[in-house]
Length: 227
Ligand code: DC
Image (cartoon, rainbow, N blue to C red; front, side, top):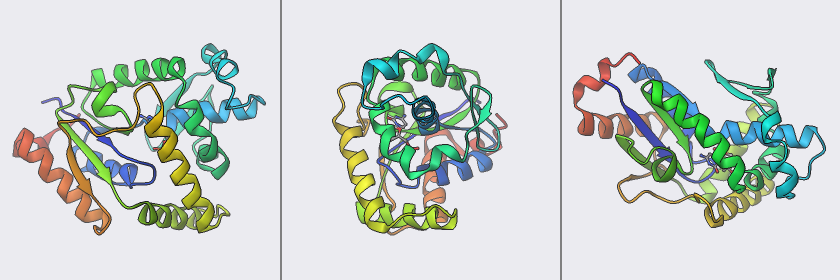
């Protein structure tokens, strides 16, 4: 049985944390689409391209080759950028890159290609509305902006990334605004998605809730999937 699960929602809602665990439990592939926009942003920054200059950012589309490998590894033109794409500087610029239609079209093509071959759980902003409109299960995962900022701040500190809670809160607010106000494939809940507010839930509780939603839709045998 092939299954596709779309998880969308605002920045730092914990989508990737739970998607990775659900992927393991269901033996399916996790695809982190945000990492692709981050890798593209990293490339622009490394090449001195202003991320607010749409024409300049889109002009290098053919030069940027992004690969997602097992174990959360992200390659940009063969270079391992898995950690470099998580810095606050990349986070502060990535929403500009993700608002450019030509870049989105190129990355979405890759995302659909990856999902076409196997069972996947894919997280992002436009998965249920645009990338995989026929996904079997669609979740729209939210949490209050304060909760999300605290979670991201704690994550940064545990990784040794220097930041203040105020900076993270400001970045999350800014990204939410840009991601939900762009013209092409903005962040929004698909009409057929299930809303999951994780503000007061632990990671395990969110994982259990998602598995339950998937089982309800696909049947218990979904747990025996093996990709
Ligand atoms: O999920 P994330 O924080 O790693 O995503 C980084 C940025 O990429 C986010 O601010 C919005 C953008 N993004 C998007 O526009 N569409 C996606 N499918 C995934 C991410």
